[in-house]
Image (cartoon, rainbow over all chains, first blue to last red; front, side, top):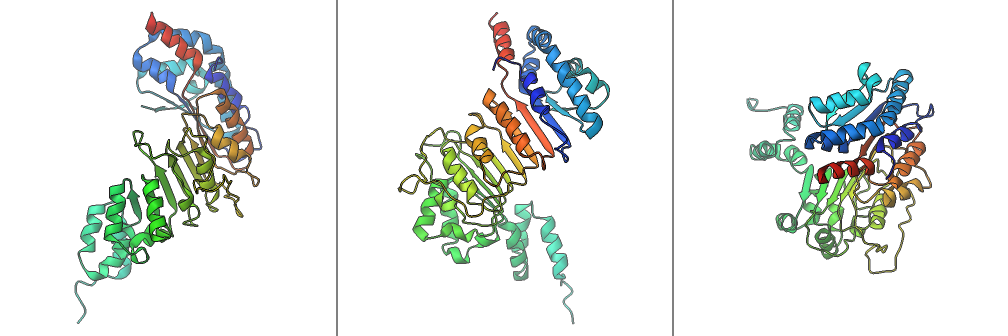
Length: 107
Length: 267
């Protein structure tokens, strides 16, 4: 899988259309980010962040779009701790800033 | 003179119901009085686990006659020795049919289970017409057999497949020619679909997507391990458009990020 998973998450979420009348919950679990944080792989985190930030920001915008008309608060599952939460905050600034992302500890 | 220790049946039902998750307390209730036995039995045998051949032998020894066993009180059956259960069913002739009111069926084999060749699930086909929830976790059962079991449960709402066998054996395990189960009344699939599969979703999701009556899941819980899983997710989301309420995606593998991590670890 050469593309980032996060790019694919965005593509999949774009398939949610007005036909999905009953849709009300999205949950995304990012195992690899949790592993990076747990391993304390700060250089790798920075590199991945640099390489995929555009894709994350695109997901961020899409989550906001889904939140506004459909009131769907996304759940982002990652490991516990300030590092992970700061990271998600940088990757999804609009959704975390608006308080629409629920961070759940996945470990 | 009325019995001062008399407890009205509805109060007794409520007491036993509150204790349904406490097996020890239920066993104590069983010993209180004969009048407590029928109510307690319903809760005590509501969930039955036959995780090993020892469990199965113990059950058969305690309840040798399937027609009088408390199996018909069971709503949930967890089987960890499908091969032995199948043999018991063949031996007694419809032993499994005693579990006629099962709503939740779980079939699993431990990771390090001794090779039992390829397990047949034919005995489980339609043994309880009330099964609404099915969970399979076994590396000994090929997808075709799992799916034939799925199709034999017309009321099935929730489906969880956590593991499947790598065998390409497409026969039904009945020593006859390979057959594909043809249901007269296929399941409606209106609950949740959970596919946390390490070998990819295709063998199960592909079959679900070609169901003639369609699928109508309300909840999708999917784990990605390859690009195919992503396209199958899109297809499932599209197929369930009128019913889908919740989508849970777990990205278990991101090639670029893992390579980056590997590079930094190696350095």
